[in-house]
Length: 68
Image: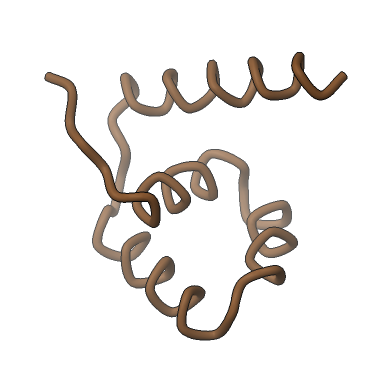
């Protein structure tokens, strides 16, 4: 199954995978309303399937290779 996520849901999943310290640094670049919306999404997600987490990790790795 390939679920479709909104942009903010994708951000929430990414932040969950990056950990609290990096997530806090990233959220510092968002406005108050965006932070509240993303925080709400994270609270509703509770957990992310391993399939989705692996996909996010692959995307992060690919992005890092493009930046380096």
